[in-house]
Length: 189
Figure (cartoon, rainbow, N blue to C red):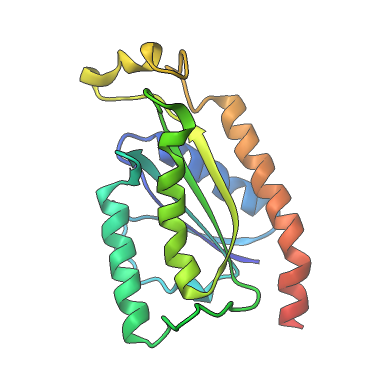
């Protein structure tokens, strides 16, 4: 499978997850392009890939500003190319998986769900099937917010995402690729 893993990481938490996604996809024998949109300025067409992973931190229930900007640019390019169609017809063999890191100090994972749903709309509009949505706990890094790592609803998240979280991500990536590979191969044949 040809995979794109695009992410935005402000403080390194999402990057930990992104690197676990890339490693698991490579271990599964896939060709992976990994793009940190905060530092890499590459022209990318998501529809050139069989599976696109996209990840961001969560900021007030939405992806970060860099991801929002990237998504807007992708939508504009898709509109200009005539790819945004009524009823968003499915493009066979094209899938997306969304992930985020979140601290959820007030209401837990419920603070993260809107961000992955929002990110998924880009791919839904492109006709790609949303194959997975994952929310991974991540500690607050800014010094003025670190008290939330122990006082929030999720308990102590100081070291998250930790090795167990990242092992879980790698397992989910491997399982997702295993489940989609027969579909992608059948369409390519």
